[in-house]
Amino acid sequence: MSANQWNILPYNRVASIAMKNYKDLFMKHDEERFNEFLNKVKKGKAKIAASALLPHQIIASLRDDDGGEVACLQWQRMVDDISAKGKLKNCLAICDVSWSMEGIPINVSVALGLLVSDLSEEPWKGKLITFSHNPQLQLIQGDNLKSKIESVVRMQWNMNTDFQKVFDKILEVAKEAKLSEDQMIKRLFVFSDMEFDEASENDWETDYEAITRKFNESGYESVPEIVFWNLRNSMATPVPSHQKGVAMVSGFSKNLLKLFLEEGGVLNPVATMELAISGDEYNKLVVTD
Image (cartoon, rainbow, N blue to C red; front, top):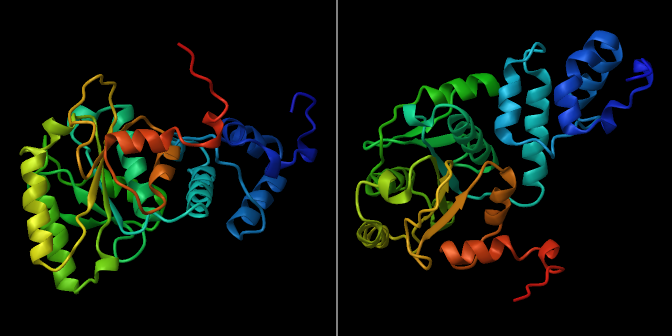
């Protein structure tokens, strides 16, 4: 680039952040070759980098001068890369889009919610639960990434949600569709800036007992687990470390979703933490006292 040799740039080797930052320059100085590269990506004949970008950074680029063309391709690459590592089978997300989420948190909530819906399998693929005291299962509308984001942002919201009603809604849909145990929701992601006890209208242990009873009475042995994803800085511990059926995570990274790609194991805050630090990259660490 510095030598103005635009006609020899290998676009398939351009890093994800560089592609995001310099795509307008590529279009300005090498429009024909760059458009040819993008068309190849669309047809699956070339790949565009996306690994270093966070989901909300990609959707923020939809407002760029290229009309979001590069962002859409990077989003699809991100979805494909995560899907190749496993499926978030039978998962749903609750996205908090209330006024308190203004700024980065609402962008992260929408982006991660869309990502979960894209990674899920039928019959839950492309659907979200509204963050509301009267939660509804809604199909994300739109035929492109931008219109889907607008659809999520327009969903009904309240300052907290009733988790018993959330699970009642899941049961209602499952019984109407006569879903088998394998098709039932296994995990529910809640993307919000609120603490767990603030987001719930009731005590979780009381809720969990009632939810378990309702599912068992309806013929389902397993109760969906909740992954509460806090999108604000917090030092609070809203649920006990061994609280059954709940995982607590925080941050903006899509890589955290990889913790939940494989089924199995006991889900609670401690188990989630242990899984997060069980990778090969941690084996070389030595703890000294």
